[in-house]
Length: 338
Image (cartoon, rainbow, N blue to C red; front, side, top):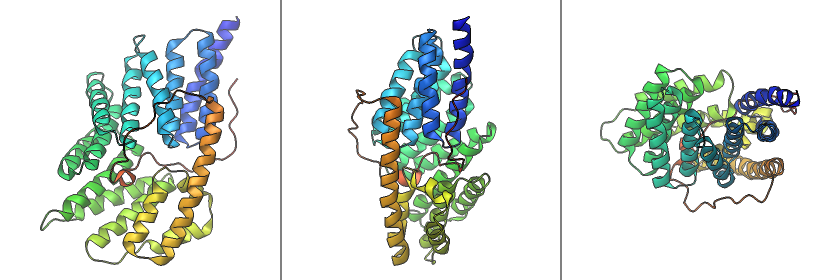
């Protein structure tokens, strides 16, 4: 009876953790994943335990703790390989590839993402396949191969269209807009119409439902496209208004690992002194907020992990390629399901 009760309690938790992760309530997601992992280990359920390890690593990646994220994801992948959990193997491998990408480990990222992409195709996992294509496009972009990046990101677009996934469509459209802008800068007689359309598509998706870091990234890209054409930026006032407002939306921008630093870079490119000062303040606050979030996360998952120290350098343009952006959600703690 006790084992049955423990199993019933455990099986609900990964789904709850996943929902909280999708709503950017990453610390709540971590608490539930850690709790569920203990229950799955108690009832000797390796799939459930592996899924929880995966969720812990996924959340840590979104928090920007790439070293510890690798450690947990690698454990999830190893445990999934102990049984017939092929889909979980593929998903964890894709996340491992993203960690390598974020740490600038290009060869490792390419190997993990390519294997994940190919196995996802074999297993008919179109969403994972699409995200792997998009991440590979970002790796190629970081290598300075703009045309190849554009091609890989277009493949991702085709996959996302075949298996609609709005977060993936928004992320990939913005990435493809960035790659198209770089191609334009090196192609005589090029046209930015495609890049502009893609960025507008991404911004529409990020605003409904609202993902503030996403639409800030799109606002920056909008003005970078204008600068490419020799025109003046036109979203700076909106960005300044957002920073001045001190709204909950700004707090979600601050916890994104990429957007605050990209905001500073853009302010310098636009040569706008007002935005430079305010963006620098946002970056300082963001680093403090992220540091505090990481301390809390480490307290939740436990310290002393034998994390594999990152040995790569951040990819050029990694902030512009970005990662998943944050959903505006409740800041209240979530109850752990019984």
